[in-house]
Image 1 (tube, rainbow, N blue to C red):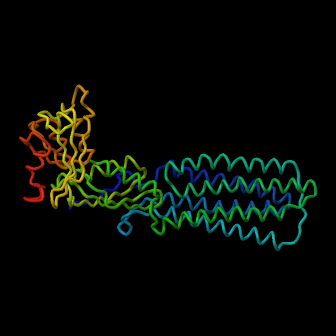
Image 2 (cartoon, rainbow, N blue to C red):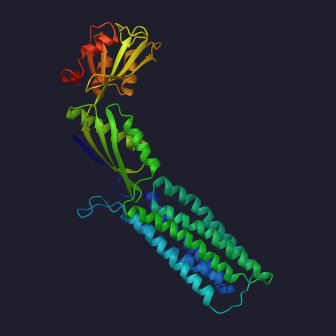
Length: 412
């Protein structure tokens, strides 16, 4: 058994570029709150006032985002795995603040007395600016959040998208006032629905991580395929993973063809490196490796013809027989004849053929040629593939020599 765990060396602190977006968000919210406050005071509009409250709540949550970004990657004796989930807690706080905002707006729209709304061209111009600012900012913040895999930044960007919609509703309500169409309360209630939907999405995403929900199916499939591509892996038994803040934790259980502890450790290190290349923002990879429990052996034999005559050469053989044999009784389950895909290659032909056979998950290669000191020997050795020499002339004779199911299960 081999078990290998690794922590990313590059995760002690959040990148300054990510923190900077927290400061940008605070500045944007100050500007938006100031614009909407001026219009709300001058117009007396309930809808504009609701949007101003929305901005003030977001200002507080933007401060929380910045705190979460600063503290999330710190580690200590009490928190050896870091405080990554602080970012998800921040996302949940964003959701709660959003629900509170929706409640305040709904209460005002339903129960406050009718009020006179005043509309001027400068107010409409101010709302256009208040719509453009979050639209542009959310585009860049969402891109930065996805690049950093930061749930706090992504949540903040989505909240700005809600502002684009709600400010547009407010703009329509003020236009309605110019033609004596009372849309102020209706606009406020529409804002409640939009904000409530955004809050639910933020809450659901944040709680999934806080409750250690699995990584998405696509990411897990990518990890599984990456592990399976390692030549020494006979079987991918299980793959699990979870998010914590912007980082991912991965655990995998695999069966290896190699038995030596040193080779097993090297294999798990290669698997970890490949996973990190295939999936971004990996903090910890834990590989639990066990030796392969064989019920079958997959043989490969170089052939000089499709009829089954064993070739005296390895890389130059025009065909290969791939035979799957059951260890219990030596029965042949499958037998395929495949053309050598590298027969026409001029250089490193034997190495390429060996790598091809490793990809076919071959357990044993039976051949007449002595490959001692040649490249294929090292390819097979690293992958845990057994090489055995034979004097047999045909595939049937070579397999009979192995005495599978009679003595030692074919020397497996």
